[in-house]
Each structure stands twice: as C-alpha cells, then as structure tokens.
Image (cartoon, rainbow, N blue to C red; front, side):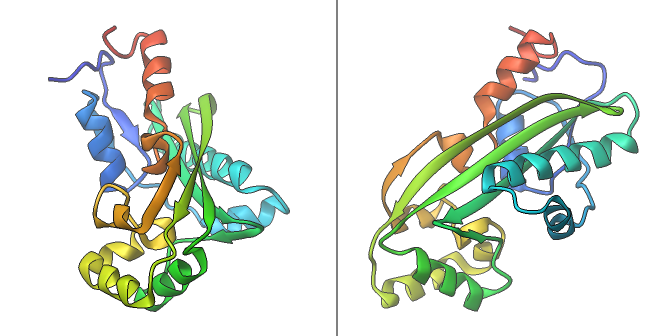
Length: 202
C-alpha cells in the first residue's frame, strides 16, 4: 500500500533496481527516469574534490538533469563513490576489473559515500550524504574466483564489484554504517524529509 500523498509519483533519476525496490518497499510511488549525464566529465570539471563531495555533486546533477525535462515533479538523484585510501573506484567494466578491485580491497577497510538530492524544476530542495566503512576479509584468490562465478554479471552493476544484500556479504568481516547507505540510498533521512514536506503519510 502506497503512503505517497503527492498527485504525481516521485521520480527516481537512476536505473538502479535496488534503489527502486527500496523506495517501493517503503511505500513510495515511483517512476524511473535515469539521468543521462557524463558522470566522469562532471567530476573532472569539478576539479580536486573528495569522494563525499563527488557523490553529492553527482546526485545533484542527476536530479537537476531529470527535473529540467519533467516540470513540477519531485526528482530524486542518488550516487555512491568508493574510496580506498586516496584511491577512488568506479563500477568495474568487466569481470577482470572486478577481480582486480577485490584483490586491492581484500584485508583492508574502504569507505562507501552515498548521497541523495531532491530537485523540483530548477531548485535542489533537499540533500543528504552519509558514509559507511567496510572491512573485507583477507580471503584467498580461489575464494574470490568462486565469488565472481556465483555473482556473475552483477559484479559490474555496483561500485566495488559486490552487492552486500546478496552473496557479496561473504566477502566481509566488519561493517560500520547504515545498511541503506551501503546500498546507495540513505533512506531514513529521505523519508523524514518527505514526511516533513507532507509528501508521505506520517
């Protein structure tokens, strides 16, 4: 049962099936219209910014891009970056790249920075960012290969090459941070804002 109060559905400016499922599971009415922006170009134009600001910038730009072509609609942009020390990771292009990322991260702690932004017409109405810290087990290369076989093409769908909600959880020994942040959508702050704006039943 939807708890959404606005006449028109919330627009999700992302093709992430996980984000869509989280929103729908929370009772929101959602339309999906992925933003078509050059993410690496946006980051390059911004210069030397940290992973948290990069996630926030991309969330804003995605929300703005879709809001510009959907007047009057509330549009949610979201992004997530992964930092391992001074290195920043993007989604792996293929299995080989995913394997290399996992080899670099095993036995070490990396940070996931997730950000969301809600835009309507030309204005960003709400922003939030959060971080989680994940320590990967120092697992064998044989285990990583077994994991990659089990995960299949899903390893290329998320930064880091894993999905914590699936078999990827077996890669980790310690996790610090909100579950929804790790999934790339800080959901509780979003729901709180939507209730305050009377867009959700409270």
